Image 1 (cartoon, one colour):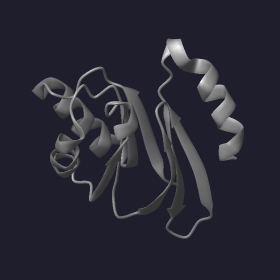
Image 2 (cartoon, helix red, strand yellow):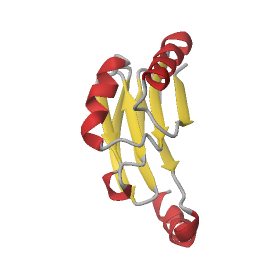
Image 3 (tube, one colour):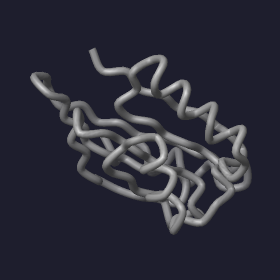
Length: 122
């Protein structure tokens, strides 16, 4: 079984948040993590990914880097689409089928655009 974590962390810049993520990844053997509202630019994502011993990462740069995905060698991630409010990826796990994952960060002011976009991703 592959464990995943989604967290609206509202800031990954402080040491306390980074340590907590690292502990959760280790404690629950997390293979893929989605961070919402990291409050950092995407140029920091690789540094963060390395700190939690993950090999790969991507950010939703269309939305001021509001969504970060980081994963380790146990999963294979292919970007399908990046939209202002979501990232959609296909995920392949070792010895398992592929799944499609859409991670949402919905801004209240433009939710209608998101709901119009979602059926196109299935």
